[in-house]
Length: 415
Ligand code: 9WN
Image (cartoon, rainbow, N blue to C red):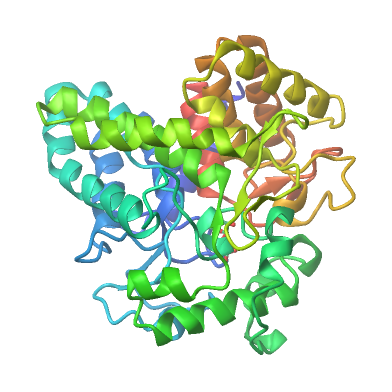
């Protein structure tokens, strides 16, 4: 691994460090994001254990009294991002958004607790109750009927904002006028690499609706015209439930509550399996149907214990995708009509997805494919720098530059 890239990765984390939290990218994303912080903590763990724990502690400063953890914490003012704190109007201190993101935090805390021995355990003990409260919130308020799977109420909650999987469910969401100049993202990044204005108008409608409901969780669930069981979010939540069980064991806590969520969720996940397509799909709770779109999220259940035949079927699908791209792993099947090589979550390769899928493939014993995901990501970084995402055919870097999670995962991978 080229030493200068390692130094550069470290430099990016340090430059994006705002004291206890790391912004995903200067300019484009000037606040603290939930799932970014999980990945970033894995990078900090290579450099400085205390700083890794601090990333999570600072994130939890934004937790609400009901356990909810918002997807953005606005620790400081910055006019460079839209929608900013004044649009969300959460009324919290620090100011926050009012929707969440994939809770990819317990596996990170478990990793840190194991890596840093007694000191790590002491830190984990402080964060464990907060994580438990977050998971309790999600299982309770996002699954009021106790199905075992939770709903997301906004595409931003999936972390894969303009995934083609959300096109159909989003059609039910009215458009809220967003003057094109209000957007800041397209001032940092070419518009063809970002979501379309129409998507933003629907995103903003949902924000204004949730705000008008004072972010009351039961009302938001009931009133939201977007209610989807995202396979990615659920796979990560269940993976995190399992990590909570392990953390409970490590810390001498009672594991029965997270174990219950985990077991119930694993059997409920069966409803998302599409045997014909050979991958998992998200479920639209309004139509009651699985969403027929092939996205990388459908492979994230590889992180969970799967029957052998299921894992092998997923591997076959993985290989057929691999045959369609130069660099793995495209966010959408390249031969699909809705694939767009440069547009954000509609085609490009993303570092955290490679990293999560590799972790899942290792869990299933598929080491060769996991090694390929690592090799491709390292090649993308070495060829194009620490970008937000990459073109799956040419390897061109796209979106934001000096990107924290790409730098952090590179460090975690080459250490
Ligand atoms: C909205 C910060 C975040 C990531 C998401 C990614 C993008 C935000 C945006 O940036 O979303 O949350 O404004 O585009 O889609 O996964 O957490 O890096």
